[in-house]
Image (cartoon, rainbow, N blue to C red; front, side, top):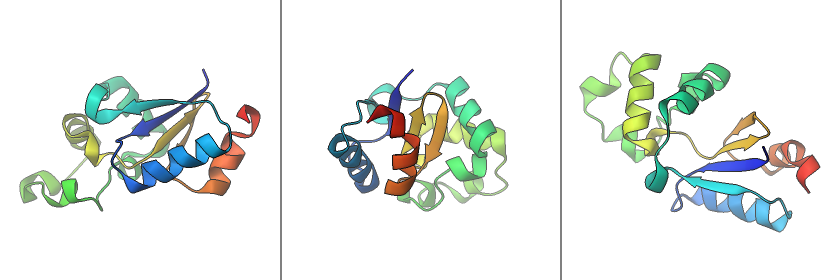
Length: 118
């Protein structure tokens, strides 16, 4: 399966994560939500594994710009629909290393996750 990092190209955290992967010599694919979107099945699987509350980026400007009605009373199904419609609502990056998911970027976590790919 290998290593895939999911996110958007103009995110500072994404830039740091991708630079770290390159500096460590970790071959990886980049899945750009803006260009390719995200399929519902993958998003649902992430939410089952990581929890939809963790996958949803409530701190970003995209979430803050949502109408209050969309932000109130969120549940998993509504959150997934919002994230699929607006992928910037997904916390970044999501790192998939042979099916093992890591959310966000911390060098020590990436080092452990990618140890077999360096």
